[in-house]
Image 1 (spheres, rainbow, N blue to C red):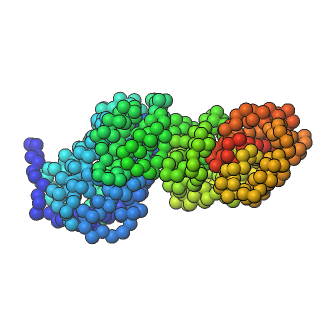
Image 2 (cartoon, rainbow, N blue to C red; image 1 turned 90 degrees about the vertical axis):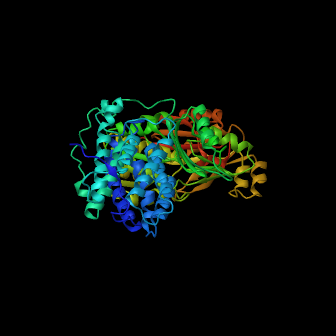
Image 3 (cartoon, rainbow, N blue to C red; image 1 turned 135 degrees about the horizontal axis):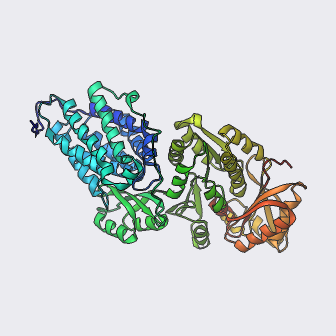
Amino acid sequence: MTAVAEPVPSTSLPRIAAPALRRALIAGIRRVIARREWLNRINVFPVPDGDTGSNLAFTLSSVLGNSLSRRARAADELLAQVAADAIDGARGNSGAIMAQFFHGLGEGSAGARVLTPQQLGQAVQLGATQAVGALAEPREGTILSVIRAFAAALQDWPAGARGLADWFGDALQRARAALADTPKQLPVLRQAGVVDAGAQGFVDLLEGVYDFIVRGDTDLTTIDHSHDDDLGALHAEPEIDATQPWCSECVIEADDGAIARATLQAALAAFGAGSVVLAGGARRLRLHAHVADPAALFALAGRYGRVSARKAEDMRMQRASALNAQALVVLTDSGADLPAERMQALAIPMVSARVSFGADEFIDKVSLAPAEFYARLRTSAELPQTSQPPPGDFRRQFEFLLTHHAEVLYVGLSRAVSGTLQAGESAAARCDAARIRVVDSGHASCGQGLLVLAAAEAAQRGGDAAAVAAEVERLRPLTQTFAIARDLSHGVRGGRVPRWARPLIEGLGLTPVARVRADGRLGICGALLGRQVPQRFARFVADRLPAGQRWRVLVGHCDCPADGEALLGALLQRLDVADGWLVEAGPAIGAHAGPGALVVGVQPVAGETP
């Protein structure tokens, strides 16, 4: 005989107070974080970029480290703060959906210092409704299906249920059943032989909460990892959509009134954005979308309020990393200038600095390409400012990469000129520090780029982190970085060149030459006199290198490609060059040296010592 569902009782069960609710959420979140790597590995929808676990873990860690790190007096206050922290920390499609679920949960519990099962069920239902409404194109067979199944189950009181554990446990069973159905609803899941990763993450959250209800805590030793290596044809299909390769996010805040959400949704549809999620309330939203041009997306968002917390990740690079079977992966930052074709071939991920012109903030080499940077530099009344990536950017990269590789080696911008390396070290200490090595390149731009290439090539040959780090240390003093600035006005405006020195240097027809010293700082080492500067610069560099050595040469130009080509050509004539590349140098050099600057990195061929 089929059991008949009954209404949730309002008086026969204990109320759910803030302290217990807080501990239950902590238990659930810890379980999701423990499952992070598995969730990454089964991630094939909406794109197979292998980061759902990292995104959920980062989103929920923001909650764990803020609202759940301190005692709460009332359930509604706790859930409202949980929602705010989730919006702030939301990453990725599933993270944004989870954040919107918590937002609805917070709004649905407003005014309740303690919650009855009926109130909690109603709040969860509002969370489910808002989660569905956050997506421009909701799909069955995803986290949404599981959230809705769980929310619907909480509206009923199972026949014979004796307490909270029976009530919540029945809803959990229905969520598990909905999870098991996801491959039947999405062909891509069925083909890969997995359930939806975001939906699995939500069930993991519920499992942890249930463990707390039953045992007073979550038992991470009971998590089933028995199938973690049985992935079948995972990641064989599909490919990343080349027309929308950038997973982009930002926060939009209204200065006055409310954000025109429906109008924004329509604008995003007209823009052609995919996987759109709008998580948050009337005055503050986190936007997630897959796009071709992150800068254009952020500009569109700026029409609806103040934009902050910009993030964009190349899903093609993420997929390449997920498919790369190497034990060691080499990571760098945007202080390094690298030839794009080598960076792609070696699957080198990059953490980007921030660049701002006044109130306009950009992500280096992502939402602001070097060519766009120099165009702004020539016309802007504001001096560009560069700032190091936040540790959270490194942490997301480390956690994602450690899912797919045994070790990570970060080769960073010289500690002497930036705090970027320290941000990477801080993030590494909060991750699996035993599997992450951080190496100071002692260089910037082209010199750093050559060291990164040498490290990535050594990793591709099978070197482990210790051996590759030792090779970088060996090559660091042998690698040389030289630079010239053609326009001293930028150095004067930025305070790096004394105002009195500019007319003297220009009057004498001199072009100062700088070189990265052993301490990692850039210092003047000479000057060029006269015209034909690229050719004179090549002679200057060649004269300071030992003879009888083969070199790898990387030339960077700051919005002067013809001069860059002339410089590289002159170096090819004067040196025995095994590999030579020309790149457009980024803001790490251009913000200080200005348009017309040239950079040279030279390095002895690996295995040969000058």
